[in-house]
Image (cartoon, one colour):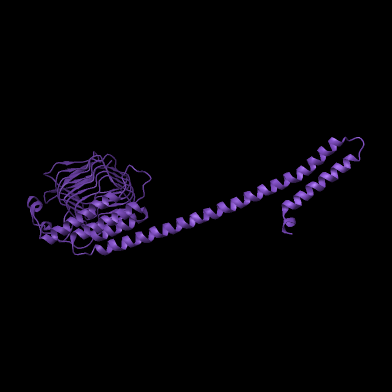
Length: 367
């Protein structure tokens, strides 16, 4: 009974009925030959079979499409589960590495730092978080005998601390190197911009040369020995406010040649204890060196400042080259001092005016 309910059986019956009906009708016509009648009847019956074949083929196609859709959904579900597993493993790695940063052994802390950096490389979504953790580690209080303010620069480089201090110093230097490794190079135009918060951090031999950085906070930071920011591009706001001041902290050689500051550059109250080299640097936004102190040589040769420039109460005590390549319309020079006995090079529109105490100040010539 089930056979007669199938579409195939009904198609067969309809085809035979149409063959007999059309053939019989044409045979009743004297003008139609028997062969033509059978041929026409066969074509009519074959048309029914062809329609059934088309219907069957369409049904198979729809079944195959549903099967492919189900297979695609299954693969998407498996991929989603795999991604969730990877995220879970990454979260566990991150939590474990952060926990190990508090370990007493320095080699364990170094390993934890490298584990965090490896996580950031394999999972770029973690990069900013890992950078935040590295910065947080560098913001931890740290003292070393060679950071004493009364040490001569040559004695300072040879001064060593106790074993625990030396071990912690190596961990911190590792964290600084990893900061640079995780930041994109400046020649990558579509690279993401990562922010660094090193407020109050104690840093030595900080080297971020040639790196692209978003915003950067170095307020009240202590930068020792030397700092290398040559060729950096800062796309966000940068604050060095009062860096290198208080408690004997200082900035050693500060190299910032050919850097680009696309937004605010705040060096208010910053103490440059030795060379400060800003040659060929571009300041595109508001720039402040208000109350900054340059104890060593200061080089601003070829600097382009297109925003505002604030040099109020800045003090230059070494050889000074302020021959800017481009100056903004808004410049503040109130009580900007230099030492008259030093070699001072200024833009054509600036001059020095001697003061009673033997120092001199920079003034803008009228016209």
